[in-house]
Image (cartoon, rainbow, N blue to C red; front, side, top):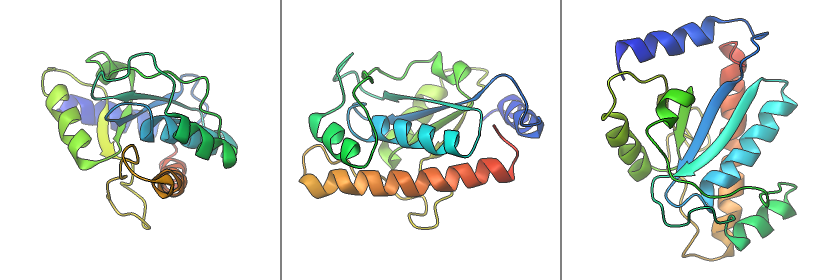
Length: 179
């Protein structure tokens, strides 16, 4: 991360919570049909419940599923927990996202590395990159396993870990007066 990006992020943290512009977060996985859309909806709901001015979106490092709805299994498991993914559509992470978002959250270490490679193509970057589980004591900096080729329990794990990591981010933002 460049010094300018660090300074911009720190300035944003120092601003009072009454700011009119939301703090923008992008959740990123590989295909944007399982983990990152689930993280988007859970993180957005928890931020809203906490009264934070946070706007959450999601994307994938690949372009495997452009404009496709989240995986039906992800939707089914999320809905069983009160999260509706049906309005979401997959998209690929773009260079412009590094200017548009304050924070980009990677769902796993491979995507984290891919995000950093893409970020390195830019001279000036506004966004910080972190792991979804960055502040989560239950899953400290752990990857969120991709459930796509696994069984139903993988989708439940995604929800449980996203809920836990989202709570940790909300607590962090509150402690830093972000949002």
